[in-house]
Image 1 (cartoon, rainbow, N blue to C red):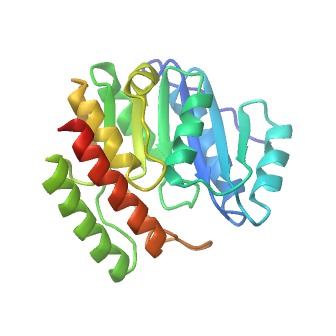
Image 2: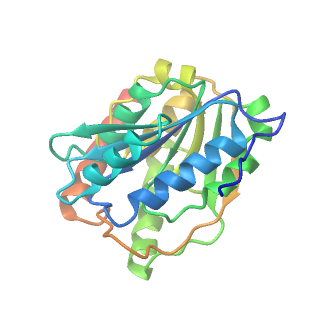
Image 3: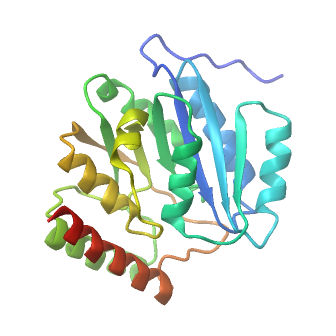
Length: 239
């Protein structure tokens, strides 16, 4: 028998948990279950929004089956792959709760850590996670370090982990920002536009786990080129 988990009195009024997916057939079911549990534990109302970004595997079928059995789970599908940023923007547009958790479906984050984001939500608009210890390949860590320095240089962002896929944001702030990035620059854009908007931002550490299934796409040449172009365009826009 499954135990009933109730939120604490200090929980968020409501949270939409956005899970962008591309070929995450092996991970999406566990990711949705974990997101539902995190929603029940940390908010008085919650929904889980799975955005299938043109997956070629059974990601959509698995997510749709889960949604059929749980009214808290919703699936939005792109007919073709549009990019990580586009998937996040689709999830944001579908969100109904006052807070939005932007995370990933690759099981590299433990959503139990959402509990540490609830207290600062009282007086902040955006709580950005940073990975205490990054569990990625050496090549991926090196690429992330270069990207982080580029973002810092171009946008003067002073955050520990720009691309950490664990950000809790007020939905009304997201609606005002009008994000445009379709690729990997979406996280930098979110932080830069939030800062320019005068949002109250803080950071919290989260655990980062090794990826055990599926494939990462962040180092593909076209992904890197697209993200770099979006970053340069963002700098011109915010200048």
